Length: 227
Image (tube, rainbow, N blue to C red; front, side):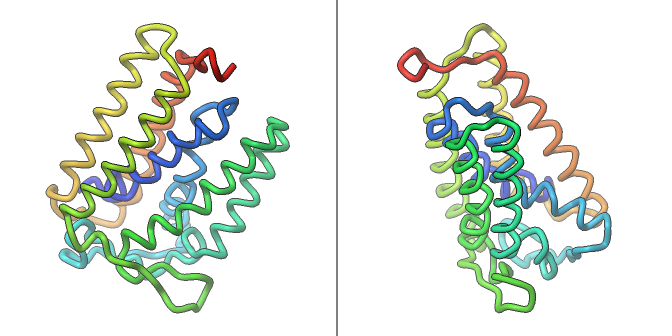
């Protein structure tokens, strides 16, 4: 199972793509990093022993991860802190206030989207009750909701940018297709073999797709009406 991969990620990718419409002067990579930030930090915190996860096949229809300890990366208060730090760093580097506001909201959006998808495992703060609407208890519901979000995000990105060359056109199209294929196949691919597999799959997947996004986004430009 490409755990964490796209059953967790694709809705967050949607936020990143859609953010380009609100902050057109931002490059795509920080706009994707922002909604993915909690899931970028999570495998690192697992490696460090700061957070913990169990593999429990069948705990939900979509994911076999028992996310019983990930307060540092995924609690609401934690994400507010991460959002503030990320937005402050982004503003300091770019001096683009609109972009900083958008990345702040995108980081914080992670809790809301995971609250919709997860079983009740989303904490507000350390030691709080945990919440979750359990969309992952339905494979069909997850596919419909997350694909609708992803299609909307991709559409907004396309309406904001245009390809300058073949890389901008086909590199982007291949990226979207790869995410779609992984997303559709992930819930049916079985549980991961170990927590180490979870960690390294997440790290490799995230790194690959962020580098790929940086590559094709450099070959796209804003549409004339937005410049």
